[in-house]
Length: 418
Image (cartoon, rainbow, N blue to C red):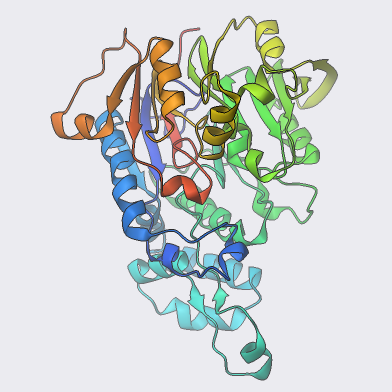
């Protein structure tokens, strides 16, 4: 690995550094009646989620040079009193509780880091607060184990997400502090800082941004990522480039397709996982091509879908079907994050075991199916010339609304020879 801290020029390059977050007590700080406030359809069982997440962590520790824990990185930067004060002022102001800054400042970095994730209870010491239905002044962060959403690494800099829902803005502020101040990540600044935006029309989240090559991005125009934000990101990313192509996929603005990576993920240089109805089927999503140069969008063209767009850029792909060939299985397995794979080296991916038809599709496409437990316990080595799909338990985690790509934030990958 080079000394460069951030280097992401593809979705598939050999993984060197990745950020994850182990689910914690924040997952238990909600009830069926409050789950909707933090964007959950149901409550999750922490012990089950932890058992599943350990499989992801175990595999990543085998294949990456550095597996960084979000909460540990946050603890490290909170050792600075100035960083702690700045971050507390931002978070408390966000939630309208500036009076908490002094009380929280006295906490140790370890305790404060944990409290950021678990939330801070609302003191019911006034009638207004007593009648407030919320139990927290600063809400818990049960979505934080989806580290992909609030930050994106592109080339040598990060993009801090402009979150579509207020309840997730804290995650963006915490990750901004980590990427700004931690010695393992800082130094190059940001392409774009979404925490500074004030408009509901300027939203972008990491599940919608896929780095295909250093000159080609695919971005989902979704319920979480706006057209205005895509324009801004395209301008920022092309500021120093003579040519940057951005393909924008117009997703249905519904829960099942909150992000592009819920219907499309890269598996290899010539293979991708797709949800057929929206990628290769008759109802495929429309795609727009933004031709960018030195910070300006020079031209906009249209494609009938992702396949035509990729072919235009010289990428003749094999499309592996989430859910196999059955429309019934496709719909069921897409809902349980069957298309949301994380690629840790060209042709080597990890996804959920319970999506059986999807795993069978991968096997038919030439991927050897390997159990995550075998990787961890037997220390199996991956043969670069072969293709493999690691299957991990994820029935509980997927109920949170995401898969392996959602739970991983790659910071450094090897370049890919296209």
